[in-house]
Image (tube, rainbow, N blue to C red; front, side, top):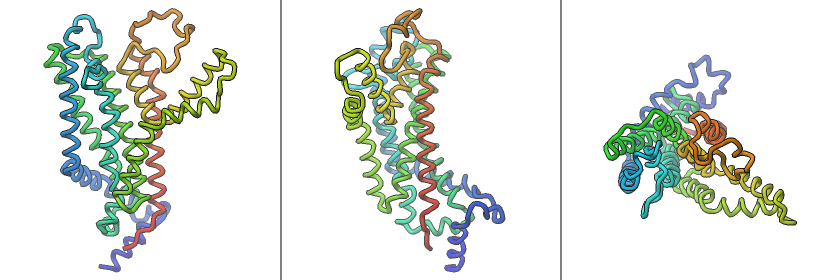
Length: 335
């Protein structure tokens, strides 16, 4: 048995160019996805997080429903208000998701790799006809599918409560806008999922990986806005108080703030769920020429407006997973 495990460990170090003789590097991918999804959905921590989001969604939508009912006949996008309207003591549901989605993603992925080492099961897993590529990608896809399943269930719950509470179905444009919002939320969570996997590879202790992920999340949530303001004043100071200097400083601050996935997510959701939004940041009078102030943008124009932010969320997810892939491939695994 020891010789078989040593042989499989050597196979795990086989370069990609030589794997064609032994089979596809993605052999066993869907077996890993199925097993990891079953573990995620049946774990106690996931059930606690699901219950928390479920109660939050019901409470927020129920509170918002009381005020939205009064504008059903006047509002063209009344269903979108269920996601964006805040009513004391509840914030908007989008705000809750921007807070809870990273926590769910980090909770799913902080022990994805180092948990296998702490249980001493990594060499046993790789003793099967499963390559490192399939193992890492399977764990990432399982986490992303689990996150997507939870968020889709919450989205369906909100739409169903809206239909029952308002007494009318959503329009096709409202469904399309809310679906794109759902995709943006999934990839926003995917960034934190991939980051959690990076820390799970770097740190051998799951607690350390979890704390590192939460520290990065808190950094971007609380401190990044302060840093962007200071950086903008340093890079582009206002010397004479001219409008051009103030405008340049605000543009630099906006560009730096978009490094944060929180900013990208907020702008993407604002652009797709609020059809009246025509620009992010400063809106110059020349940009309003020929436009009716307050008139909703067509659906495709809203998609084009938030497309760079959505692309940034997807690109950040892919880049972080690529970093995790490189780190995992270079890691030594012994029987």
